[in-house]
Image 1 (cartoon, rainbow, N blue to C red):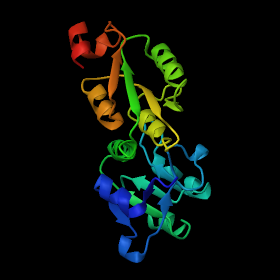
Image 2 (image 1 turned 90 degrees about the vertical axis):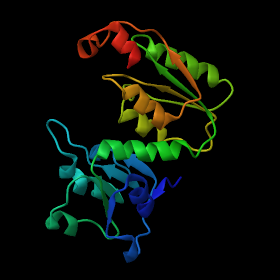
Image 3 (image 1 turned 45 degrees about the vertical axis):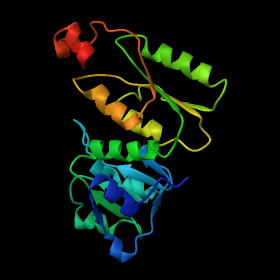
Amino acid sequence: MVLFSAPQIADLTGGTLQPDSGNGIVAEVAGVSIDSRTTSVGDLFVCLKGERRDGHEFIQAAAQKGAVGALITEPLPDSAGAAMPPGFFTVRVEDATQALGQLAEFHRKRFHLSTVAITGSVGKTTTKEITAAILGQQWKTLKNEGNYNNELGLPLTLFKLDHSYGACVLEMGMRGTGQIRKLAAIANPNAGIITNVGETHIELLGSVAAIAAA
């Protein structure tokens, strides 16, 4: 399934497309990757900056794996740009994580399906698995795997959606005020489950009341 065209990515994120669309870019994105080691043919590679590594260092590796473009937050050196395969594009944005969420939110809204969001201090994963198993009796059901319950993992999960799915169950983790609201805006759920509110992350928010409000 084609997820986005290069100009569409620029429009959705407010980013700058290079080369610009006037140069006849026809690249189509079939997947999204944040790890050059697992990049597949047709992917958009999202360059994220971590504490130890900078995704911009791995654009060439991603291109060699078949990525057709990259989401960047800083200009590429001329030498790196010259080494890219023909037709490779970049979209430069202010915040790559935010742009990833914007793309996932748009993709999610293409589908009319039952979507359940699950959060809480404990029991999220078990509740997610049970809910997905129940819905899976009726529909093909997408769920996030492992620790894909944050601002990176949830969008990457949503990019797997296609018209074969009838339901989606998404666990959402919280590490600060407003994070669940942001994840819910991306996922656009029509049902939600809060397993409980306990003292997990109290060191970040200060009180159980603040955790509940977050």
